[in-house]
Image 1: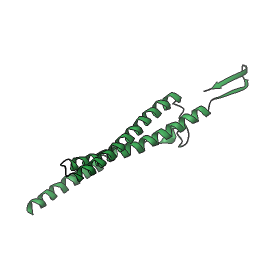
Image 2: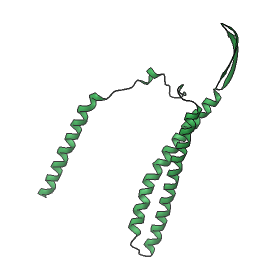
Image 3: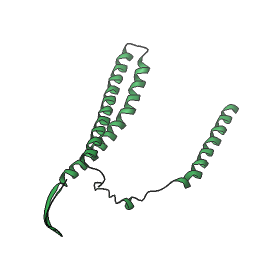
Amino acid sequence: MLRMKKVFLITSILFAGLLMQAQQNISDVHYINLQTYGSKPDSISNEHNYDYYSVRFKKATKLRNAGICLTSASVGFYISALIASGYNLNTTAVLFFSSVSTLIAGVPLWIVGGSKRKKNKKEMKQIKRNTNISFGITDNGVGLVFNF
């Protein structure tokens, strides 16, 4: 019992020290005002083109597919663990642990990849919609402008 109190006391002191250190470093944080950069929540950035979002879309698709594969592997491990438990094999615990581990890794990858993929696809469609041709009078005469 005395040993448990010492462990608890040491853990509490370390935790309190980390909290004080975190509060001490809060002054080092620099905040970014998004309005100074002209970004709006539902608008595309003028800095990026279609190719930029296309590459990000492909990466997000790979991330989502990796999540789907890991989640599917988790189901396979779980079914294998159920089968192994019926035969009283020693690998049951390892298979259950593998099932849970791959599920914990796969589901967030699937969700984040799907979300990023959806956002990049939306930006790509927005850029395609912004392609236009305009014809008008300029200081030098008549002008034709093709925006893409």
